[in-house]
Image (cartoon, rainbow, N blue to C red):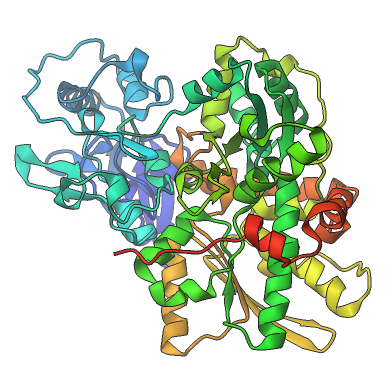
Length: 575
């Protein structure tokens, strides 16, 4: 490969031909600030914060799109560069809502950090009059007064997720980021995945804050308030308190939830095990009885809504199983009150999720049993961290404690739902034991692990060949389903997670200031999840003693009439 030699801030640099100045600088540990740029997602060179000086060249050059050339000398921090970046920041801030203290992204805002780094203490430009849009009708809140027109949200929504729910409109001084026909996001094809929130450098996009709803429930003496925590939360929550990425804070989290006032603290991994029992049974029935194949998982509400909008011909392929969140809510308002001697009408179910789409899922009309919502309120990992801070709890000093019994017992199979490939692997562990009638020891299916956009595997179990695929990110899901439509791909079982990387990278997880670390952070969180699986006493869903008990005492068997009443659902074709 041809190498290009150059100097950056006096450092001799040698990089492949075609490398940008920004990439070359990063490789040699020279920091060049960026605001709009994101490698592989959004590379427009529009904000110009990354400008550098190249000796002998006219004007300053945007480092993110300027390719290196042989022998050039680059200066990244000279007086002209510093003054230009500062002026550019002032221009951006002139049209930005600067109510930083009341903003949800205070201290986690890339624009705020750059302003601090460059000593921008005042703005000398006059703010232009602009019509601000405030869209707060759904799980994702959009405030255009904070938008800096970087375009990141448009790129990830359109190019990565293939949703196209948000776009850049108008030109020049009238340019705006908006929705088609300027309708509410919730009224469009938005799947509420929240990836736009995570990629936004400022606070223009945020999840709907439901923490006040939870506080009100906790303070209501008439309510019995229970909480469930998703597996991905336990390896990410610690980041909000300065702990290392991927560290398991399950014990501290449970203690903190009790301190907040929840009557019972349960685990969504219990209902993940329940999901495997129902979904594994459904898979075997479809394979053995000639049902609709491939069976496609339905755990990810963002993916389900994407399918309802864009692939209505595959709705019959979706598993009829509710997600673990909704299954938990259904049994928490039926089986649990029966066992605990409580009035189901007095039970208030709260979910702590890594996912903004779970807020939408909990509000779906289909997610009710006997006129009662399965789940009453959903908060994200970020919202839980905020509540803990509001309560004055010193999270890092908390002792570890365990989940409450009945709906708090789970297996390693339930935990790995957090990772892309986890639902598939958990299902295969149970299906393999059912088909062979044995307690198999080889239970780690490495072929479905990892962060490739589309993974394929053929699993041979007791003479049965199961062709499987694992997909994360709805853009990859669209690509795979198009191949099935064309007849170039054929599977029995497909796992789809709506967010790139799976639940560990959900739209409600902690915000990364350095977006270039996203893949590294995802790998560390995933490693934390697999470590929990390896440490688990039981690693197969059907071995969970509480799962055995709920079928013996209440549900009868997987796929029973009562199971279908509580744990299964249907889908809606959407325009």
